[in-house]
Image (cartoon, rainbow over all chains, first blue to last red; front, side, top):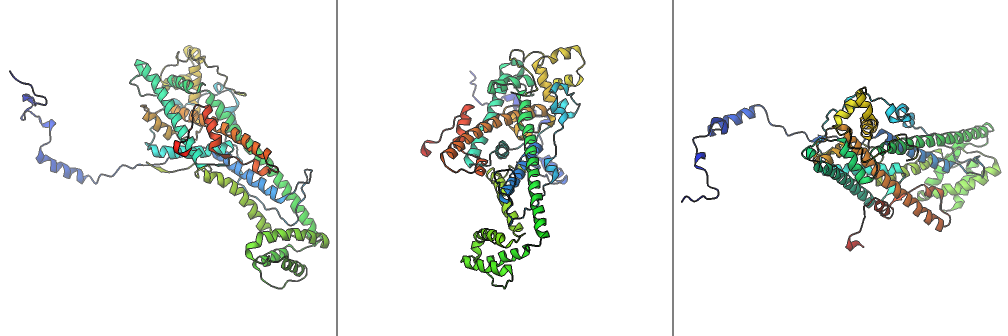
Length: 373
Length: 154
């Protein structure tokens, strides 16, 4: 009785029956390798892909929010509200001019499309609307997580957060990833439940809608409402607020300039001298000063310890108060500290904006990132 | 949602009707839109959805399409239909935006409580909101994501 062993090679597979197309003779391998080498060195595939996190509407909204913050902090710095809407300007402060690019507040949304109900907008025949296949670059999970992290930072800034903790951003990134996984898992589940679609890998709309309803309890059409009311409307609101604050700032600046011109017309005080006083007080130099300068310089010396460079800000603030009384008594005018003031104001504004950007993983302001996968 | 102009009342039972074809067919039928069959299908939610999906080109999501396609590929799909990829991107963005909005409300409530308890809270500070785990946890819990610290960190 013939015993059949496991793994035994069948007798018909013995050599000699292999045809030429089933194997490469050893002697032919070397010429084949030389032929491949002659074609040139095999270059590694270029794996550098640019994943852009670019949403012009969101970027503009965040930029406009930052500009509004800068203007508001400048207004708070350079004005005192005296009960009414009129500003009592601090005569020691000259309001700096701000120059924001006008395209930052440009209308990026074509109003036509989102004004009307969406089925009144005819579908334009483009490659997108036809659904022409478009391959996406293959990126790694790590790159995806990094991209999602930056997206979360942008969304936090858009929602109104100015700062965030590291762990919260991490948690939001995890939640986004979990949502995508569970949503797509649910989507796949509808394919698996239907025998006709079990082996299909083509994206279809109806199972997607069912899966989204299963996960969130709402329809995918709500996405339109979200985009219209949360993204676009927010953009319009922020631009409107920025324009109103800018007008307020312009008004304040005109008031400041007119009062400055009025006082200069009366030739009451030389502001550049006041600047020299501040410089001297900061550096502690003992240059000779004349007229009003000598008087104020003496007063600075009387302040005691105000000659050190480390006490510049405090000494200047004390000086402002001191000069207020000085001005009232001598009817003088100053044009000084515009440089200091503007730096201070801008510093506050940019600081608040940058804090969100920095805490947000430096992705809140610019949505461009290059990832290597 | 208040102020919506989409105006679609969605029925789960009718979703699988005439709109069950491939997404490519939806786009073509909406582009032609002349036949009587097309008019009848237009009344179904799936047709509305396909029309909407074809017009998503100007809806730029924050989540890159490449990231969404990565997760679709991991789920066993061939993510080459840009319209559906984009729809998923914006849907995920909406979901996270809702959570963040809730967290902001929690943060505002907490800040308001602290400011009312502390005399002399400034207005400038009221405009600044910091997202903390304290605000994020209840917001996520509303969406079914429960966060718990590890035992050793409690």
